[in-house]
Image (cartoon, one colour):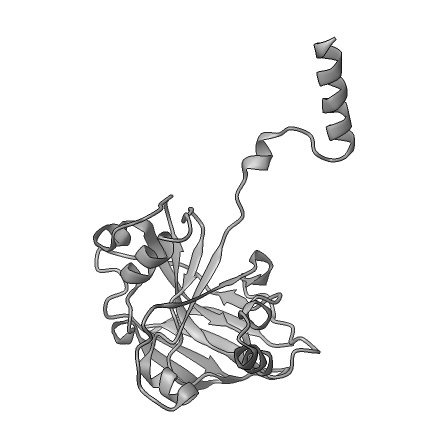
Length: 232
């Protein structure tokens, strides 16, 4: 009597879309972001140069990923949308509880990304003591460019910038981060299992500001353009 029951249960699961499959084990990528990681940006936001006691960590939905030069469609109902340029690193292996001294082994490439932020919504969430999901995780809010492989030195010495309509609006140096990528990877791995393909936006320098329909966005690492798309 047991076998027919198992067959029936399996048939019911298949009909409901729950067919047993190895694809169920497939994991979606995670997108992590770090706030307040450059002192000058902290000053323009809060009026003072300071370092937070712990990394300011937030996440973005996988549906927020924007790549391949596709346009960013400005949301109609979220108020002011700001660009926040950042160096983005790509996780290349499985890891949990990673010591800082080994963290460099867990990311292999870098690009420039734009952490689009619904600023009006963020300010309201901050006043109410609520998390940042709504202002950071909307569709298209994690734009990334082309990946560049990293050497043993990691992000050391990298310069990056963001241009809008041919004018540089943000410029940063990896060495100015309050917490470097190794420390951030180690910290995040204490709370989350990191998997190949996960992304980490390492924080934005000063100069964050609003975008508008018709803007042309370009991102650079040193003198190499790695990011280009339009705002629609």
